[in-house]
Picture 1 (cartoon, one colour):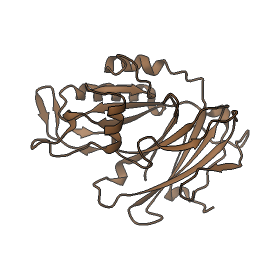
Picture 2: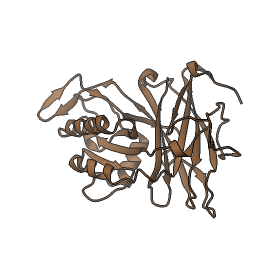
Picture 3: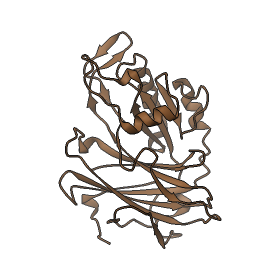
Picture 4: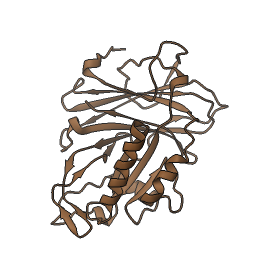
Length: 282
């Protein structure tokens, strides 16, 4: 494997790196994937911690959505890097008009909106547990607190290589380490999100022309529902999976300096998120 220098590569982990109690191979290569061209530090399962995914559904023509954005930022200030946000612009309130010319909707976002039957926004889903009333911003805190942080089913490591393979091309290398036995089909989704997007937003009765949109979903690297990572088995702990995927920034207005990758490991049977990790593109 090619060794990637830290100065050229973004590396993010769901755990602290140590030299003892490491998870070793053999690594299982996922079918229909690209070659992994990064090396990953050894990991200590005892230092792993669980992160929580929040997917906020929003739109630039939604007068109440800035309130949802404020609640999300409040939660991020409280929970720090243990909370991973993805803001999905969806429903007719995200459709472009003459006053709001930008279309921030995505194919993956539209499919997830339909799947979760999102109609009113702002709405938020915690770890993809779609429960009645859970989408209301005032309820988000209780839903996050309900996640059992002592249960750490897996750890995710991400190594991003931007511009090393080709100009304007990002290669995402991921290692998933199962930390407990699991018998259901697991899937891995890779999302590209971007911060610092300046575009008009309705706030109550006022239109803010230079509103800053953060955590915005821009694309899915491996489809709406991700890649099959493991099929149901008798249940094996400490299996590790390697996966890689590339995406080109050419032809898009994405700013790589403001972009990150979000990796979501979830149970295909009930869509529960086992682990989530994020890492800057550069």
